[in-house]
Image (cartoon, one colour):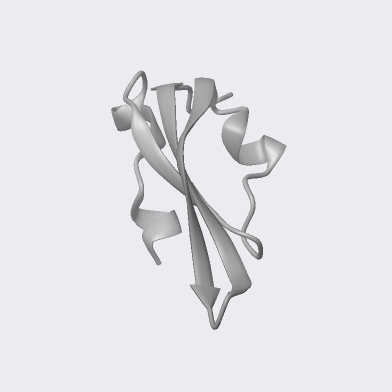
Length: 67
């Protein structure tokens, strides 16, 4: 329900931390709403020496509600 409660115009110009991984990448629809999106770090999730997932955190600057 958060998608319906979020007042996008009230957050214009703000920065955000975004999360992406193997299953939930960042789409152009999301990144296009910011002036810039920069990867901050990558976290490899491993078990028994096998890579299970690669998680990424991004700094997104300058939110544009109508981006």
